[in-house]
Image 1 (cartoon, rainbow, N blue to C red):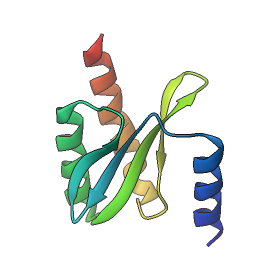
Image 2 (image 1 turned 60 degrees about the vertical axis):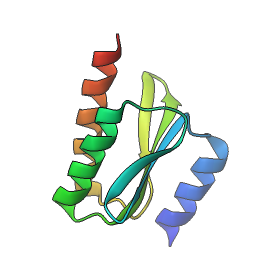
Image 3 (image 1 turned 180 degrees about the horizontal axis):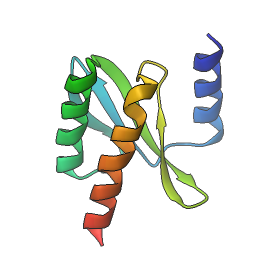
Image 4 (image 1 turned 180 degrees about the vertical axis):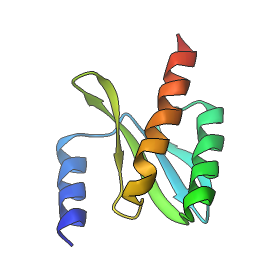
Length: 93
């Protein structure tokens, strides 16, 4: 309950630059733009961790774009999402 409240308060205070919504294991960009290969990787991570529904958002942080996760995304998967996001960030430049 507390984790969900904190998530929603942060969403209000720090709007997302982009958002990837995972529904029934399928990932789609629901706000902003992300590379298609990042969406494919999000689906692979969702399958790996048995994640049916969730949200991964990119927010402006002190050192560039950081990822924020909905409470339904298991903490064990957060670093995998960060790793693949970093690979796609490097590929843009």
